[in-house]
Length: 220
Image 1: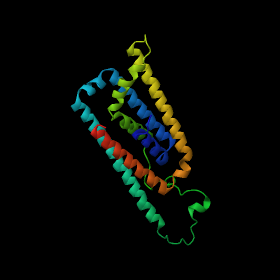
Image 2: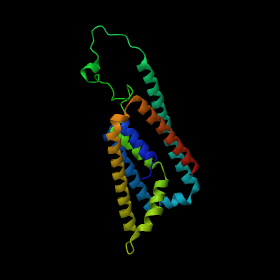
Image 3: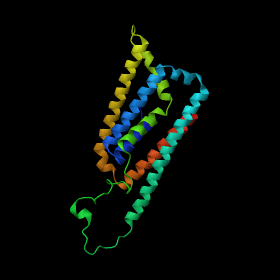
Image 4: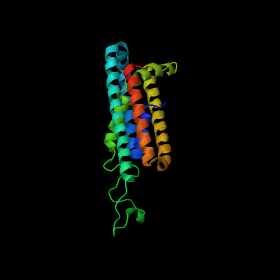
């Protein structure tokens, strides 16, 4: 539940997409966590911990995924910078046409405020896949759950029952935290969707994903 790639992705999806796509990504993240917990209970976490080469391969795969998203976020940031420069260029005067903003409505087919033209954002299915990949590509999630949760299994309860129950509670709390964060960002979104703020957000997203990619690749 600490700030990391998952939280950065959720924030970016709320600002560049909608609550619906951000919720889909959050569900993908929780699904990946549940799968990792299940695989960990089946022994995969122990296998990764005992096989440095296999664990390193998973780490590098996750680092590549994060680095790819960092590049995409950086491209969005530079694209917004280019779009902002074009917007500042003087436009020719229209002889008769009434500007769309005079009616208080955005032009038909225009993107949401602050979003570059042609950027439709991810679909719900794509967002779910992004969330699934974001959490699922980090092998440390399953290892953490299998190393952390057994310590809290109540005395007298079988570990094969206690660990899945604790994992479900942990993931439910994680989903609640993500949903709460989404609502907070969504409430602040009207003040954060200017082209300048979105450009800064995309730039910070690129930096965070890049740093976590390096950290994961180096085993930190």
